[in-house]
Image (cartoon, rainbow, N blue to C red; front, side, top):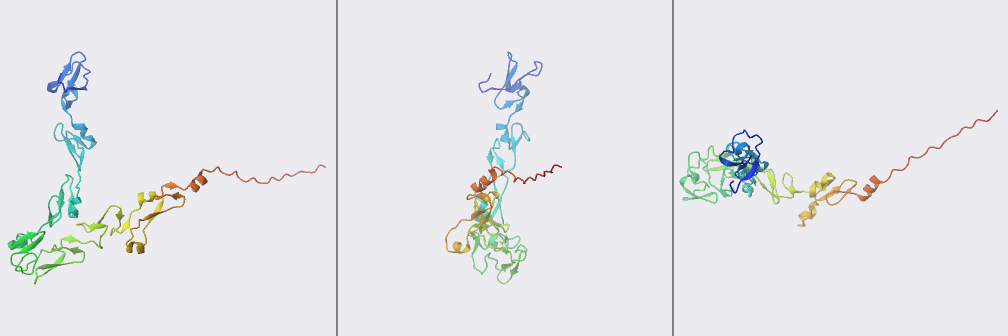
Amino acid sequence: VPPNASLLWSRERPDEPGCGPHGVCNTTSRVCVCEAGWGGPGCRHRECPSNCNGRGVCGAKALGVCECEPFRMGAGCEIEVTCASGCSGHGNCTADGTCECAPGWSGPDCEMPICLSTVPGLPPCHGRGRCIDGRCECDRPDGTSACQADARCMHSCNYHGRCDSTRGRCICEPGWHGEWCQFKACRQPCEPHGWCSVDGRCQCDPGWEGADCSLQRCLHGCSGHGECVQPPAAQSAAGEFVFAECRCHRGWVGPDCALLDPDQRAELYAPAAPPPQRPQIVVVEAAD
């Protein structure tokens, strides 16, 4: 018996086939002792590591290989796939843990701005300059940012702006921004508690919410037993950081309204008072 063998399958019928190339039959107990990584009747089935940890399908494409569900990876689907940087706010995280960058950005985390051509068919900076930090440094400055001496930008404003033919620049429509009107603008500033994503929505920092990330989140959402009250604007404007507080509903207390008010608890669990007794009227008839 191989030293790394383990008992993985018991043969109950002596007339079944042998243990195959990946197991040894114990003739005394009539049990197949399979090699590590093999199991099933006759040790003929390749096993997956940790049975894919419940995060994949074993043998969907190849024997003994886990086919992991989206956002899971590893031999046993034990690794959760995330984009730690959030793609720097310039792209989307895909199921395999890589960033899909928005136009104008590149790099593993979409952290590097790149220069785009404003005229179809021409290279970045139109071959008349170098791309540095996402902007064209022109060999012969001509007043434009993409080194287009002929100031062409037709069909280059992403259908969200018009071309200023005298300077070769895009004048963006309301709600769009960027050198080529390629980014959707947020309706209001997201700072200082968030940032504007490529889809034009504010992505808030932890602890903040709202369309412009100006609302603080209350602890545990007030446990469903209160209302989250924002600090007065005057205090915030004065530079004092004041946390939002829970205004608890009647009968609940605590910073997150998770505790039953002791007085309310006593009222709930106090023994019920006996019902008031009605006065009894007795009628006595006089004897004749």
